[in-house]
Image (cartoon, rainbow, N blue to C red; front, side, top):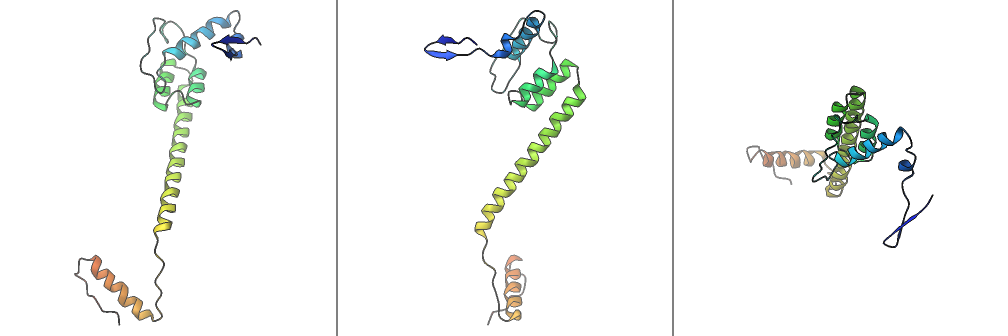
Length: 156
């Protein structure tokens, strides 16, 4: 493959774009136009006069590829899939299953972080040689927790 020089840097063109020949050229151009048009994560503004879903057909596999690489968020991908009107139910179920699994993974990670923080904050268990002393001690704490309404017994 030939390399190009631009500002002293070697640039290798993507092979995918070089494979488009004959009838595939228009499909490749449509994909490139839609990629520039679609609202990706971090997009500030986009405009075209070659309207997707009107002037050309948007393929669902383009959307799923960009969603899988993190360029489209879940809601934007669902919106574009609805407009493309192909394989909507199957692909949206896939997106929702992945979103649910990601959320469960995030909750599990958060739970583990909280558990590790709490593990360092735990006090050692108190041990009493006489079980009645432990009962007196914990009933005194119960009285404190109830705003002093409970009975407090002194520990002797």
